[in-house]
Image (tube, rainbow, N blue to C red; front, top):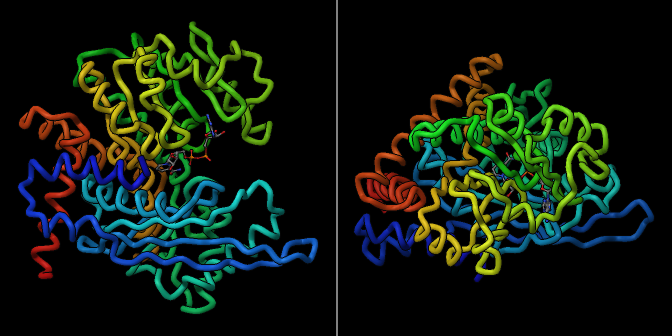
Length: 410
Ligand code: NAD
């Protein structure tokens, strides 16, 4: 199944409950604009490399569109399309005044030099600068992109349109970025894990957690959960997984990874296991925070956790999702669980438009407020309708986008 088909299936399951007619469903599912561009750049050795870049703008009925830029060899139109729609539902469920978009370039950024990466980024902006900006579509970092790349994007965009740092978010703090943006998604996963546990009547100290991925999301989620007294027993990255039943010293793991090029290779404070084994560990909570599509029909029966928080986008295949639901596993879906990042991106945009900077405490407080409100609404909807948290989240999101579309007039 393609990534976009999975998102569509989750949408359709929820749309059934909102009584959308077929025409409205078609309207809400289709992207407003899909752009594919050629990104031709000169490499350091003088050769020309031709890459393909995408920007999909899914829906703008609730405000300018918002979504990350991914630099990864698996990027294709279908993936970008699916992630753009996911952004529409994510912004709607947490009630940010945004629609959804996504973009990316099919490239392995690790194979490019720093200068090549900058040239690729600037060339991509040259190709799409007229379709994004502070009031139309605001890009942000995603896999393979970071705050430095966002700075290049801003600088290149401003060459055409003049000063306006709100044209992109996820910028460095000293360059019109927001305090707390880097930690926001992982922190949000942590805040929501805490809220979810409260609703389930459980305690952090009795909750063993396994986290797949120790990048931006996984690392900050691990830090927050460890500090909140959860027992983080396993972490992992592309080098493999690291397991310690008594609990990982997360501060040591963070220090190790940050001092080894963001890699856990050679981390000796825990037993080395495989990423496949991590998925099936005897834990209460599993947090996939790396790639999409990691929980499928092939490994769903190995899962022993009864709570899953989707730190990554689309980590569970719909067939596996159905089986987990039948087994009574509580799943907090991506559109809620990892919404902390876009929420603080929104705060960054607000600060840029107002030329007024908030401190870290304010950012953290407002993040807590936005996520708690969204979580409480999703929990209530799920209980009222006796549906999964995923269906409840989509129901709320679809209702809001539908209403905005109708109010605006088609
Ligand atoms: P990242 O590039 O910072 O980190 C990814 C991590 O996953 C790294 O530790 C990497 O080693 C690991 N990884 C890669 N392949 C793996 C594999 N096969 N098995 C196990 N680990 C593997 O990316 P990120 O920003 O942390 O994003 C992770 C996920 O979260 C993505 O799905 C992304 O779309 C989603 N997400 C990120 C944000 C954000 O603000 N960064 C916001 C919302 C959603």
